Image 1 (spheres, one colour):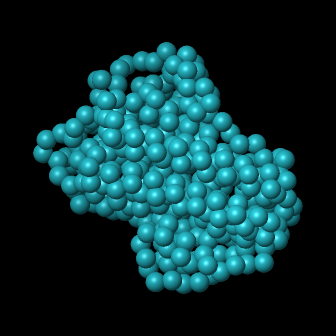
Image 2 (tube, one colour; image 1 turned 135 degrees about the horizontal axis):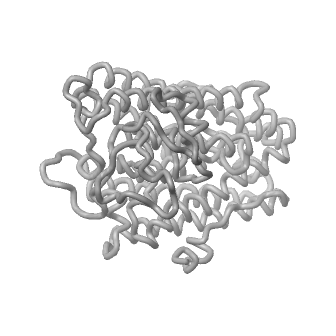
Length: 434
């Protein structure tokens, strides 16, 4: 590892500048780099989750506008390294089986806590739509009485999370923490409410009062149980990330799966790149919301942080291809890469792939800058917002184009086992409305 000066997160340009080194690449060396980057990125995610945990503990000990703001910022900061790890999904079964515990979305927040009257009182799709575990120490789950007088990891993971087999019943992970810090975002695609200051994100996101965690000046009831839930779910997030770090350390299960069989490792890498680029990010996370013009389809919906979430997904894909990861503290993990391997066989295709990754990141940066200074992501995808829609559509177009290059890499390396996930939003948009 190389220690660089602390550079914040202007990652895209930095990584392209520091990637001038050319390595002699073999499948064995490339998959080792891939595993090394996974370990570094998940370690970074774990460290930032521990910072989040410390900020939330302070909020719960001393609720105030300042400690609430600090906890929210720690959550946003924690998304920077975690979102880069999503390039390890899809191709690695260990990661895919685990991911639902930490990043499942969207969630029906009425299962967790109070919601606005506009949310409704029931759903034909979810029997637990407004269970509100924070307000109810006794629950009915699957026809059985459940003692929820104490909010425990077992209750959240084994009873509530995906209760009744419904993926909208999200009880754990980043988005449960996000909801408990911001509350519902009731602004839709409209303007920010009067009286709120700051960036578009700060003015347009959810606005849960810090007094929701004050025992002495409790708002919205059940403040002690709400604090208990937030503490438990944050501790679980840290524990889950600790588990994934061990999977990628020396002799860890995930590492061994890719380094013991380098061809399988390359298949995992390109399955992850292609599926995140196309079916998941271009399709389910972006194009679906653009088709429906629905703010409920934004990934970090309570915090209005979706623009950053998408950007760091793209950066994570670039990391995997270039064989480089720049940690928050400036530590650079690097080694022989897919880029090096492709260049040895077809320099023009490597140049094309690098160019496509860079162009997509640039399109993401345009979207991110618009969210910082003009309007939030949910406003960008609003019906009738031609300019905002075009910015988001450009991101989709670049993701699709880079996927076509990924497919050429797959063919070049003769990796017939790669299956890239599709999306109705891209492959059959009319099916979205059925």
